Image (cartoon, rainbow, N blue to C red; front, side, top):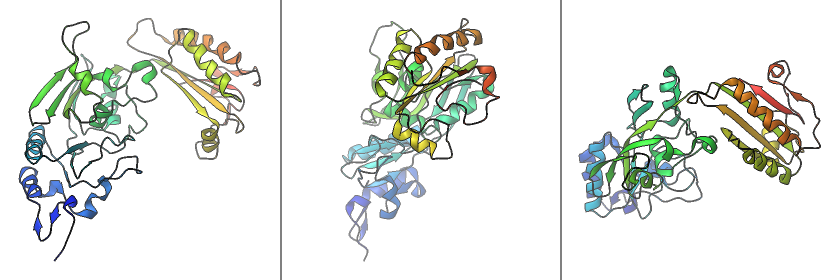
Length: 352
């Protein structure tokens, strides 16, 4: 006679009745309850915290999600929605032998409306695939978490994911226009982003980032943005963190908001330079700043010459704070002529 803990969906000699009910809703191939099947769902991208779920369910529609939620509510079983499991906050972990509702099979692109710059997707749709689908219309989806090649829109909504471009374009909450949500009792509601300055509570803004505690998002309408007309990239390295920090403050104080602004410490610099992605940074550098000045296509005033002007403003702000670096720089038209590595102890102003 096989014995398995109740936490893994079986009791001594019989199938857990809850598992049987879930199979009746979504089908046998859409429920995992064996111990070895559940190991991968014990944690998300933070493996230090592991909790075994009672089962994992793979619904294929909003209706199935609602039926599963109602069954779990009747049994008073905790629920943990999950996308790709790439998060680092434990948001997809099922505590107290809860059931994981895995939305990875709900991955349809429902609609793209290039005229209104929106897309409607099921929330198992992968982040990077949104931009890929919109590329033919000259549009893209701005939120770009580091796991965007794998993470899902539903996970992004649950965690209010950001990415390197959130400095200028904001996080997920700034790009979600509506969401279909299954509440904890199984009711299905459509949350809308309120009009600018309009009356009422911003329930959609409250929902984004709630990590599944208010409900499970099954569909979402996303805001798309025009592809940038031009991009300039500046890279500078520093020996001291104080100079690097002051350079960041100076850029923002000058009224410039780069599409991204990232400071990298010495340990990461050395790791990058020892890898296949070596960029030519000095290994004794304590910090490096990479600033992307992106020209957004939605602004009539934003054109390539204007972007170049902004770069010329940033150059002296960096130079003032890196006295140990040579004064020579690479201009955009020269960058392509310089062999790699192009910026050991220098600034690179690259154009693509």
